[in-house]
Length: 357
Image (cartoon, rainbow, N blue to C red; front, side):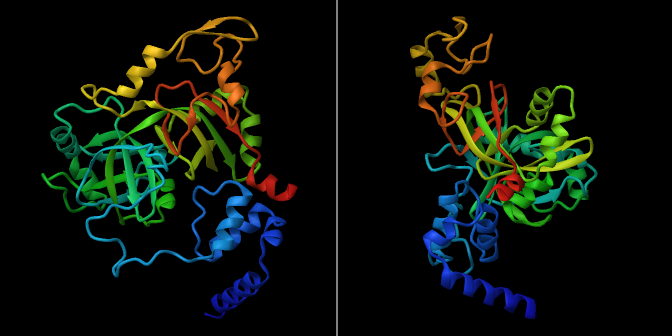
């Protein structure tokens, strides 16, 4: 229509004047808006320099075979990470239909990082994994270049998911459908009822995460609570795993707030999601070399696995010296949040950042 043509003309005029110097002087909000208007993915782009570089590269993409994804070739999602953070244990050959949990009568799932799957998945997974499931089952849902990592809230009768719109089956007869939070659909860029590839993965244990609220309303709502830190911990504990680039939903007093996961640190040698019979060699070697450490502030001797002091919360000396985030570990793209000593860093909101610039 006319509005679409006008927007295309506006973007063309903007592109004709864009240089690195010009773009570097713009607020992050404007850079993101231009990328989105041109169909350039912004997932994983956090720093202004990354956004500027993406605009300067333009929309050129490698040629793809006709028909979209190549037959038999899995997409490369952000959940894998540049260093292969996600260890893939198995991938279903057929895609699963993703259904809105809220539309199926489970709206509370929208504030979590968990999905509801058919009970028939239990048998299918156990057969492939040698009869033993991980204590923490982690799933990667991927569509084209996007992916999210989630946990399983519940296994339910196949009939209940089929009634919500599920259909088709994996090899072995398991129903190929799942109920997912709305943020999962948004992150993958799919509508309810569309399909995604399902893999079972093992992820590094998270030590530190940085979240950026979209608006100042989140910090205001958090600040009204008697114990903001405890409330934030409870909200984060509803998520089993996160990836850099995820936009998660946290609810306070019935109001939903969107937050971007902008950075993560974790321990690749210690993973969630491995069946008990699968030895994590990296974790075993780390445990042999690990030693207790003394806090530089209160002198308490802390166990090797702690990233901060049990008494005063001071960061472990070598982690503090390394910089680039708290909680120890190394930068990762995806990490598990189950049974971890997690440090949460809340960045200024995108709204405040836009005003400041």
